[in-house]
Length: 348
Image 1 (cartoon, rainbow, N blue to C red):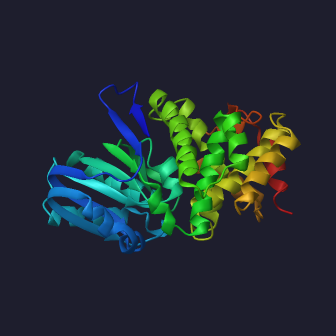
Image 2 (tube, rainbow, N blue to C red):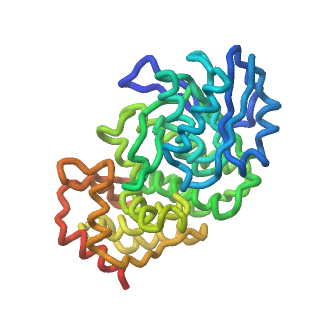
């Protein structure tokens, strides 16, 4: 299956998301694979066997969200300088969302921009992080606050990589799939309720539909000036949770799952979602062993962290909320009292 990306605002940028077994890849240029210690042990030799290049290098970084920093970017850059990569060279991101985000950001700034390709090895990266060109790193102030929109030359999604993925990591990717279904496609949501994620053909269909939905959004709004913001459903709350727990307690998809529950509670407060619909979403999250509870210790501190979100502008908060299942709305006029009333429900 091939899902084309064609950015309306940047007509010169086109690439394909290929959902199939990894093909033979030939490059008449220098190539550097960026991966981490965990993925390297599992998949590096397989990827190398598929690549023919003028020169091939490997840059291996530490595994974990806590290493998604400017210090790691500098480490990668130094390795590229040592290998004497030039402006025609190519980076290949082999790993999950952290590796993909950092490889893309490095590609965007190395000699003012070189090409890169995504080979995502986690479900979360396959359905979300590898598609759309968001790159960057975290800071002490929040998640992904440093970065760039920078599109890859191609994305290769091979579900065989997922065979070595821990169950918890696999479930984290399902949170992003559920996010897309709730926001855009009620029929897709209903399909997910009984879908067999262990069957390769079914999994490719699940991933394919999710990528199609994201591609439609990214094609219309590359740099999140409008509808692309809808992809952040669950993330405004989730990013605060990740920040409060120092990016070590929850996987990104797990924090998003809790964020979805919190966003749904706010949607119910505003009359956008019924309790029955909220229960449907929560049951699907829990079916895949995703967390749906979180105890807020300090509501004021939690609320203040919202203002570090990239969607906040002119001291106004923006929340992406479901309008039933299969619909969405963007709210930037929710008063502090309403928000804190919802947050207090998570202190018990």
